[in-house]
Amino acid sequence: MRSLHVIGSRQFGGADQFYVRLVRALNDSGHQAIPVCRPGSPVARALATAGVARRHLPLASKWDLYSAWRIRRLVGELRPEVVQTYMGRATRLTRLSSAGPAVHLARLGGYYKVRGYYEHAHAWVGNTRGLCDYLVAEGLPREKVHLIGNFVDEPDPVSEEEVRGLRERYALPSDALVLYSLARFIDIKGIDDLLRAFALLPARLASRPLALVVSGDGPLRADLHRLAADLGLSDRVRWTGWQDRPGPFYRTADLFVCPSRHETLGNVILEAWSYGKAVVSTDTPGALELVDDGRTGLLAARGNPATLAARIEEALRGPRERLLALADAGKARVLSEHSRHAIVSAYTELYARLSADRRSTTAGAAVLPGA
Image (tube, rainbow, N blue to C red; front, side, top):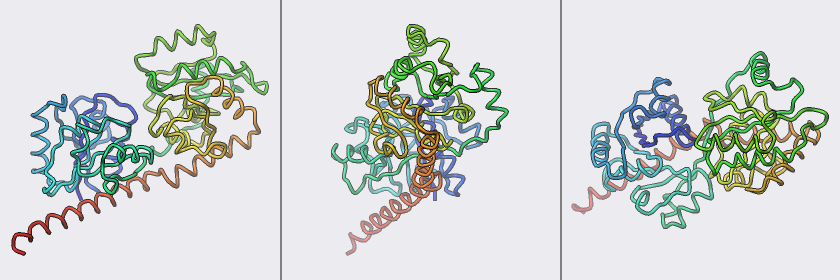
């Protein structure tokens, strides 16, 4: 079976990284997934590094008539059963006949505007129950809205020597309790709330120094560094920049913190769990679906540094066994519901059903005139 996967992004955020993971995983499973993306984009570079053949289109804007025409031509040339689009630009540029052989499946990872961008697709995938309910509330037919979550890559193997080297490079004392966070430096990720929460925590917990390590980059970088200095945290916060391979940082951490003001799902929570780390997260829509408070993680109110600090301290002051139990329960959730195998199987089964329904519909239409 063959599918075409169209994305027009210039960024490499969570949705773009999931696109790369899914295309690679589908191909590894024996399904032929052909990516269509912008030349020179981070997505194109990541796929090239992985050795995945790509088709490049400008996908310049919602009015890019050339790309819209080329998508239709590619569908005619390659004859995929399913054309899956990601986010608004690629979806708006993909216009397929409802009577044609290919099904247009739009995949959403956020509460995006539906009208004018998504309603012309033939079926839709949301990665959370809340998002699927939103799509139905926006007028899409429930029977054509499908729930399939995300998966994260298998954890990188990280040696003890690598962890020791990282601690030395970032001047982390061998006995330090390490909080870790990973995000783009934009407003909704709440890194400023994390800094304010960290400022409320004591410098030492259980006689151990407390350090915060933050990986990421973005337009708020200078503001966040300035805020850390204003809060007197310059010697307690380690900024690592963007990390394409965050595994060593996860391995070094005692606790992962997700301080977002909004997350539709929360890939970093899944990633932290996959590395066997306990998680404290704000109560975003995604976290509320992923985290069973007190069992698989701890939840704090969004935009409230005081409650975030309290949950962090609760996690670190409690018995070590409880922290390990939270981590183990989170990892079990990833393995059972968000593994690569589970998500790839869900997509390929959906493709097969949609394709079979389309063949049945077009065959029925073909015999009507002679009936």
